[in-house]
Picture 1 (cartoon, helix red, strand yellow):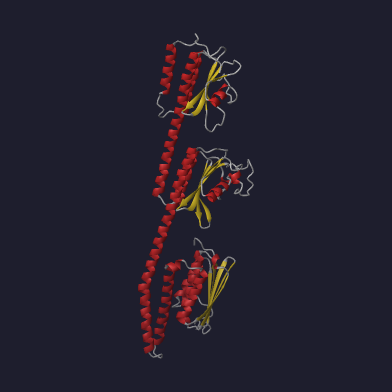
Picture 2 (tube, rainbow, N blue to C red; picture 1 turned 90 degrees about the horizontal axis):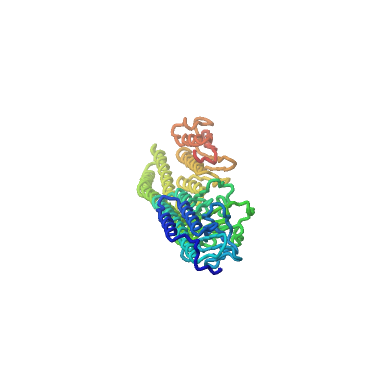
Length: 550
C-alpha cells in the first residue's frame, strides 16, 4: 500500500464526524425483537456507506458481506451512490487482496481505491471499499475509514448471531415438540410424519423420509415433500436410495453435496438410469437408527440442488434421528407388550378350558364308560348312552383343539394343512372311524376368512358322521384351484331316510348340516347334500378362496 500524507483539509470537522457516529450507533442499537434482521442490516449498511462517502468526500463506497455458502464471491450489502457502482467478484483488486492478506489494501497503479477487511473474531465477514477521484489517503482518513469498517463488521456479525440465535431457538422448539410427540404416542406412522415434516421445515429440503427395518426388508414409515416436488420425480421412491444404502452399510451418517458425482456412491448406486440432470434429488443426508446396537431404521433428507450441509444442520439432523430412533423403539416395545398381553390372555383362557371344561368332559366320559360296561347291549338305553359317549368324545376333541390354538405352541402352529390333518386324526382316534384326507392345491392361497369357513365346514361334517352316520369309513377330499375351494365328505353310514337329495334344514336333529349350508351360502358358495337309506351321505361344498372383508 502506498504511504499516506500527514493530514488533509478535506476531512470533515470533528463535530460532524461525532454526529455521524452517534447517529450510526443509535441505528445499530435499535432492538431487533420482531424486526427483520436482513432489513435492519441493509439499513445499517446503507447508513455506513452513505456516511463514510460524505465524510471523506469519496466518489463511491460499497459494503460487501461473505456468506459461508457463497464461495469466493462477495455479496454486496449496500452501495453509495445507490446503483452507480457495479458489484464485482473477489479477484486481484484491492478487495480481493485485503481479504487474502487480511489487512488494509489499496489499488495498484495509483488508482485511489481503499479496501478494508471486516472480521468477526478471527473470521472474515466482509469488505468495506471506498473510491475517490484522485490523491493519496491521509492517516486521518484511513483511521476514519477503519472506524466505519469496525462498525460494519459489528453490524454484520450481530445480524449473523441474531439470525443463528433465532434459528437455534426455532430448532430447539421444534425438537422439543418432537420429543413431546415421541413420549405421548406409540403410533410410529403418526410420529414419523411429525419428524419428517419438522425436518423438511428446519432444513429447507425437498424431501425427508423415515424407513423402518422389518423382517422382510425396509418399510417406508413416512415421507414429506416440498411443494412442487412430485413423488414420481423422486430418486428412490418407497425404496432405499444409494445414499441410504451406503449409510446402512457403513453404520454411520453419510453426507453428500451431490451423490451423482460422489465417487463414494458409485458402488451402491442402483442401476436406474440416474443420468445427470434427470434426477432432482442430489444433496443428501442419511443416518441409520439403532436400538441396542441393532439397526431398526434409517432417516434421510435430500435437496434438488448441490448443497454442502452446514455443521448446525447436521446436528439438527442427528437430533431428529435420535427422536426417530426413540419413536421406532417405543413403537416396537409397545407392540411387544401388547403381544405379550394377548398371549398371556390366551394362555389364561387355555388353562381355564383345561382345568374346567376339559376335566369335566373327561369325567363325564369315564362315567359313561362305567355305565356302558354295566348295562346290557339289548337295553333301550344303550344306544342313547353310546350317542352321549360319542358326543362327549367330540366335545373333548374340540376343547383340545381350542387349547392347542390358544397355547403358545398353538400360536406358532406351522401350516393350515397341519391343522386339517390334526382335525381328521383326532376324529379317527376318538370315534374309531377310518377317515382318509386328500388335499390338492396350496392352502396358503386361502384368505384367513376362507380358512375359517373350510375348517368349520369340515368339523361340522365330521361331527355329523359321528352323531348320525354310524359309519365305518369316510373320505375327505379338498381341492384348491382357480378362484374356488371345494370340499367333499363321503361316509358309508346309514344315509338319509327322506330321499336321494335332502334339504338339511328340513331334517330334525341335523342342525350342523343347516349351519354348514348357511355358512357357505353367506360367503357366495353352494352346498349339496345327497344321501339314500343305507347308502351313506355325500356332502359337497364350494366357495371363493378369497373372503377378506366378508
